[in-house]
Length: 177
Ligand code: AR6
Image (cartoon, rainbow, N blue to C red; front, side, top):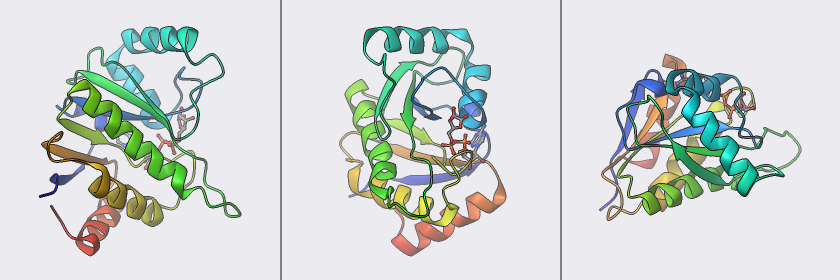
C-alpha cells in the first residue's frame, strides 16, 4: 500500500490540510513566491515563530534540504513546515538536496502527527529548477518516503496549469497511488 498522491491546481494557502510545506529560504524570515503568500495569508504569528526558531536553533540559517515546523496562523492548517530548496545549478547535481527537502518535510510532519500534507513545487520558481526534473524528484521521493501508517494524503499544489500538467504526466509515468 502507498499513500495517495493528489494533484491540485491552485493556491497552497487555500488548502485545508494538517501541514502546509513552505518553499522558504535559510533565513526563515520570508520572501516572495509561496513563502510570501504563506506569510501574507497566515499572518504575523508564523514570522514570530520563525524568529523564535532562528534565535533558538538556526542563527546561521536553516541548511538547504532541511525542514522545520511552525504554527500556521490563520491558514486552514495546523502547521507550516518550512524547507529550503536548492537553487538550480547547471553544473552541479543538487538533486539529493531537493529530495531531502521532501523527505525531511515528511519526517517532520510524521513527528507532528500531521496526516495530510500539501507541498508546492519546491525550487521551481525563484530557484529556477526545471519543472519536469523537479516533478520527477518530488513524486519519486514522496512515493518512497511517505509511510501509509503515517499519512492519509500527500497533495501537490501547483500554481498554474503548466505545472499541474507536468506533475500529472510524472504521476502517470511513475504510477499512481
Ligand atoms: N501556491 C502554490 N504555488 C505557488 C504559489 C502559491 N500561492 N505561489 C507561487 N507558487 P517559489 P522556490 C509556485 O519561488 O523556487 C522565496 O522568495 C511557483 O509558481 O515560491 O523554492 C523564498 O523566500 C513555483 O512553481 O519557491 C526563497 O528565497 C513554486 O511555487 C525562494 O523564493 C515555487 O516557487 C525559494 O524559491
